[in-house]
Length: 130
Image (tube, rainbow, N blue to C red; front, side):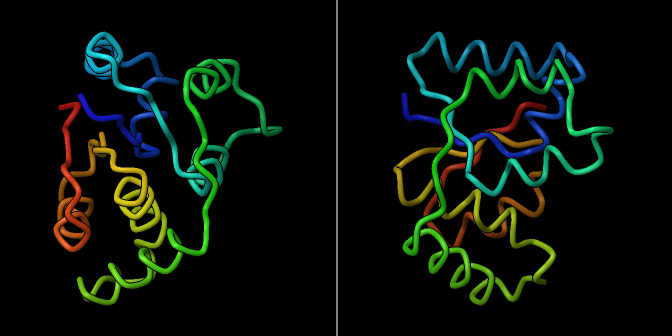
């Protein structure tokens, strides 16, 4: 099984202790997938947290490996946004997709509409936790 880059919505679901998402993540880990996050995902998940701390988010992040944004990932994210004709507001999603493409991973998300559009331009497989 391929490694998996988690979209920010998955980490938020884990923080909220969403059972469906926990089951999907546990199944992936059971199949041998490493759980990865794009470096930029930290910005998304910490936005809106009071005082920058949430025990449940810390727990979710402790189980993943961060993939730093490299020049290659940044360039591909920009190209994907351009090819898809996507708004700049999708830059974090584009970085998730580009990270998955560069490391040879799938993406796990609940945001199928946006991620699927971008993933089509990066040859990335999208998995749903729904």
